[in-house]
Length: 602
Image 1 (cartoon, one colour):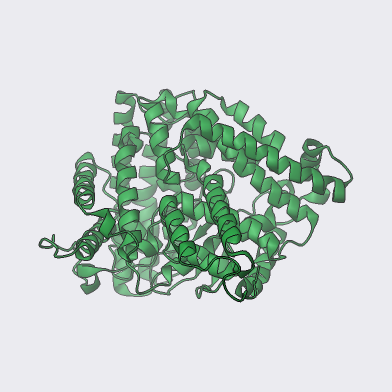
Image 2 (cartoon, rainbow, N blue to C red):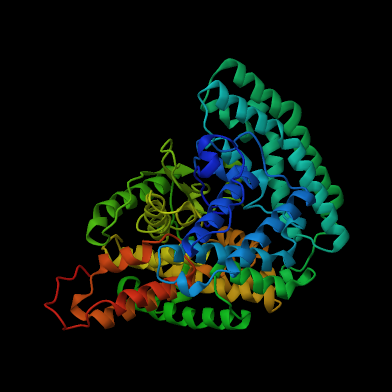
């Protein structure tokens, strides 16, 4: 942003085992394996198939042809406990495997991804996230309408599945309300500011007539009269009444209990929760204060680069004053929605043409621009990426917020497009998915440290590729860098050091070219998703360290395409495994000068 990312919250899924035969049930537990490989694969098969059933929305989001598209996640405490029990069982079996016999084998990424995911999930249980899930970015009021653009339609069976799922929404909402009530009783609540943003979104959803509601988006893609009538009826008679119940609950009951301190430290076990979420997103064991200090040091580095461009192209060394100009002066902002979209489209075209010189493996799936819907533009739709469908039924999407263009700085538009598409998220995620021989765990599960680290690294690579059109856009690149450095400062500041919301906003406005509205939305994102914002810079710095090591080790024999292919070859892996992989690759490569130098594409 998986994003945002990143709103990229759920890993993509494909048919596997019994699911491939259409049974809809998870495969049975296999007999004791005869080899380490069989054990790893058996656990991976069970975990992957179980995940499909536990989180059916993910199957739709990523185009699983035979997935459970007729239901929603069961939010009840018994279902959650049953899933956690299964996770614990898989983790115990993984821990019993001799890791020395897995290292360096094709099973290594499968093992590492599963173990990191399961350990991070278990550690995060202390947060009790299900008890305070009121999010303007990742809440169901945003994610469910998006499914109307992704769910397969066009056949009687597909339409029946969509309708059945939509008729389950009221029960789903009531389950969520019950969880939030339990959160109040146990002292776990969302911040008041985030609750207020969600109320605005729900009001916008209810303001539309049923046939124009984002929940009725199916009818734009399938005009069958009976289906049209059934969907509009479901919105009018079932979904909207449930939305009104939810709104009344938030406004009349919940908001009075919502916490006024933004940091997760205000919830029970908040400090332990924050450390767990840092590890969940970055795959590393990080100290919050060290994260904060890393952000401050990175900000100094970025501002030094900014001063160079500011003096060269803008006639000033006053970086804060220049950032304010780029943020507010109409010559540096967009004029129309169409202009916002056009800049993104032209950036993608240039990047696609330049790919072959920088990457050996290229993505096959196309990527298109998908503007955010009006109801989510104000608070719920930062730039993000949605992968292509596994079955090829739809392209990947760059979800772009084109709202309020005259207050949207032009400076960072190109860098954000490169981050979300090529050479960023689209290139990396499409390459991961387009490996049919690899286990689905490595093709579709991801962690933010790798995925967001790669996308931020890609913004810099785009400059090496000659993709930025002016120093204004390079200032946008550096502003994006400053944004990610600020995230380290602000995220740890809010959740571990007692920073206020306004303190975080003021820091970001002073150090980036982002608009006031964008910064406020960003800070509210960090507040409701502790730890995620740190993953961008943490991941990028690790990739850059590995590249510097490879360049030093190989000298003139360094080939940027080979390095990129090695980084991307196993999908989204924990950063520790990435380092081991690159070090093993370098250990097997001749030292610089040991052979006739190859032509470098760097």
